[in-house]
Image (cartoon, rainbow, N blue to C red):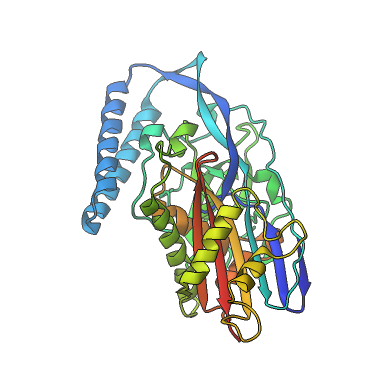
Length: 415
């Protein structure tokens, strides 16, 4: 929901991001019947899996781009070999064992835009639906990814960070502004008239990827089928590919456990740099100049990222804009001051184990720019691609209790 004033667009969007989708609140896990394997091909599977693990470890350590590409190709071939070996393996059902499937409850991503003379507007939030699927791995048409196959990616394609392929199983992870399209979107942003009705019924559900295509604007989409109920598979439509997360058989494998001292300053800076690079990459793509980081704005943004750990809102208890007050108190906003307009995006992002810290920051903004549809009316995107903004400050705070990064983006400009 949003209210519009002559010089104000202010909205709050609930979001979730494992790859660009922001996740907050504890992760829920559901039990999934395990299929015990016979000894047929078991040695081959173990050998291939071990080889994949070694290659992924090498990939995480190497800095040479040519070597990285070679390793990625090798891992891709090995995974195909592994899938073939598993498909040939004879299986029998087992009733006394289980694996866990991740099911998140959502957190928030929120945006606000205003000029110095603006007043705040309202916001809205939404909770994730519960899933009642009865999981049986054999019926889905794909293999769940094992925890051994999940490792941090140091280099990635933003539109497909988990290198998903046609035939893969994946969770659809989005916010309450999820948009699913009947046809491959031709524009950026897509035409809202092509959205299917009631897309939320498919959120947090298991999907099978039928096709992957890049539209004319270079945005990657996937055509998916809902396979949450193997006996009632439903063709869904086109979703932005970065909203899909590999169907992992071990929920813990998707979460990076921080050490006793939490996350280092260097890792926090990696998240921040990824977010800044993502903002400027999006602006460059549409011919806008890059935003220049203002150290004073980043100081304020750090204050805001600390704030939103306990108060995820643009406004204080009296419905006054917090960032407007901060900018004014720092002498940066108002008549004869440095800036006369501002915008704010705030997000939370899970400490996902298959993302490098830089990638967490990059995907935080990427999802807000390219997957911010539905009720949001592309509010985050409007701030990122606002030609009147010239400067930015970004603050990142890690909260060990929730194992999440809280990021505040402060945009400013002068008429």
